[in-house]
Image 1 (tube, rainbow, N blue to C red):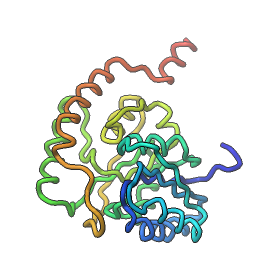
Image 2: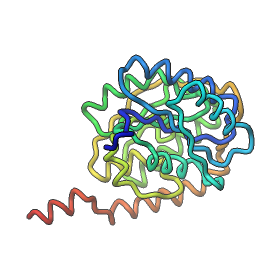
Image 3: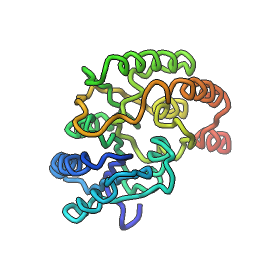
Image 4: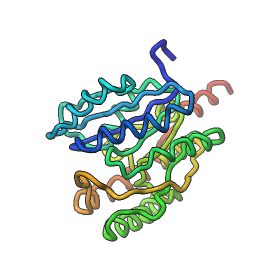
Length: 243
């Protein structure tokens, strides 16, 4: 860890979420400050076309813990999360969406579970999304688990906390965010799922739908299944060397 490191990094991918930036930062600061840990809030802007970047700079003047990394092209959510993992300075990483649907007040609860796990994932209880999105998520979760042999309940929940060592073993690809818990389990890390609150979107609109996820998701599942049987972790190679 370097002198500029912090205890906790909150990684927030964002794309055209200008109205949500201020409320999200204020709520995160309200929740994280009582924990007594040093923290940063790292926004990864995926080439927004609205005032998202300007709003991040404005809120940073009020809260110096805010940081901003910008993509030069719109690469998608997985790329933004991967960039955030690379640039984050925390020993513990937190991910959540910028749309205010994830509840920051659940973060302390997930952190408690991290004492006996390497990655703690939220399960969205009583989702506040349209029925078609809920249905497509159930079908997608079932298909992913069938193909990968995993048992993750809610792969679409972005609210997660994890130890930094987990990301050292993760491959980088478009679709990573949906398979992060599965890939962590493949590598031998302990994964726990915990019910969390889910809130309706107040500002902006969803960037993801069935049409832009269906076929890509199927191909990603097949790729992850292949990866499962071809991977080797650094832990395994080190044990082999010691023997």
